[in-house]
Amino acid sequence: MLENLNIKNLVVVEDLDVEFKSGMTVITGETGAGKSIVVQALGMIAGGRSDASLVRTGASKAEISASFSIDSNARVQSYLESQDLENDVDCIIRRVIVSDGKSRSYINGRKVPLSVLSEVGSYLIDMHGQNEHQLLLRNSHHRILLDDYAGAQTLCEGVNDVYQNYQAVKNKIEALRDNNSLLSAQKELLTHQLDELYQAQFSEEELNNIEDEYKASINSSQLIEKISKILDSLNDDYGVNNILIEGENILDQSKELDSRLDSIRTLIAGAQLQVQEGIYDLTDYLSKISSQEDNSLELGQRITLLHDLGRKHNCQIKGLADAQKSLENKLSELDTSNETLDNLTQELGSLEKDYYTQSELLSRKRDKASKALSKEVTLLMQKLGMPGSEIIFKIISLDSEVRLNGMEDIVIHVKTNAGQDFKPLNKIASGGELSRISLALSVTGSNTELTPSVVFDEVDVGISGSVAEIVGQMLKQLSKQYQIICVTHLAQVAAQGKEHLRVEKTQKNDLTYTNVVSLNKKERADEIARILGGIKISHKTRIAAEEMINSGS
Image (cartoon, rainbow, N blue to C red; front, side, top):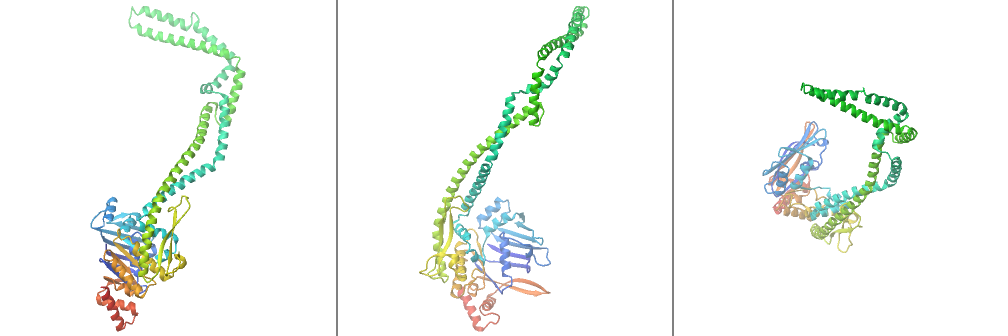
């Protein structure tokens, strides 16, 4: 329950502190006095929009704070706990609007995002504005009203989440299909390029060695001559190899005379082995080079082919293997795109199934709620001076296409008099009738089970006489269970209040100030008499005001 509201530097309010009590509190005041500012402040406390223009002229910031008793509000207590916000018997909300347009929100002294403030606000205040009857002219609002009444908001959000995912996957599929021709051309080119490389039948070993082999082949006669000369010198009776063998033998014999020679013998033996390995390798090289002597033409043609492929793929001969691998990977990715398309198609089917499952649940919930809501609102409309009137929340089934908000439209149809046909609300109802229908919907649809404080901001526009009295009685009846805050211009409604606040506007030093005063019984009579009779209040008007208050108490 709302206990206190403090407003600083908001529009024409410099510093205002208002205490609220249980039951029905009515707020009245002359036109332009600032009644809307109180409602606006409550709306911002509940997470509504703010604007730099709301900051009082000359002030750097506006500040609104409100204190709520939440000792019996389990839902808001649970939410505060889930957000690691201090959870006590009171919840204090503060909103700061800076003159540059920025705003900050606080709950129990801790700064919070606006989304958290809005969530907490939805558990504390249920706002019904004076312009809600204009929303009734929009068919999109009819669905919102029904879903609110049915408690189907979460289910509808779930349907819309599936719809968004469905559309995202569908867009991906369409994009892939649009690129099919391009992908096909790319695949054809890659396949052709790979075929050229495959036909070359190269190996990494060939690519790494062919240039050296070609160079050797064209110089084979000189190499044969030089290598043969080296081998002859190594294998000569007085060549290095034989000298090392003889030296090793002598040292092997001499180690018996001095063991220190054994380590030197080992070094000589190792050197001889390396020389012998060199002889073997040179002999093998000579054999190969001799066989390549007549292959220089063939090698030249081969290397020309590989150079040509290298130019096509912007690489050296040694890089052709990497180029081939890159092309293979690209082709594999294109093949994977087809696999991706198949997977996306399957995912789309799964999302579609999920959508219809949830939408059918939503449809059943709406169908059941539409009957109950239509009945309740019809009864209230008749009480509000519309005898013979009826209202129905007509559910119009749509085609089976996946769409936002489910598989049906909801359109309010009414008949304002007995014997008439039902017609769309925006085609038949007058301004006064819209106001009464709006009020009936407000009372019926108030989420009072979850929000203990309900604010009605002049929802009685266009209503007068006995109907106005019924409206007041209706709000008073509602206040037996919930805190009702009602801004009204009707004496019949104001007289039903348990508490009465009057908004006053004064001017001082060319500045405008707004204040809120809690009225006693005599002051209430004066205020209601003013509403009834204007500035000049007659004795009869005052008596009528007193009688209205007494009958309402």
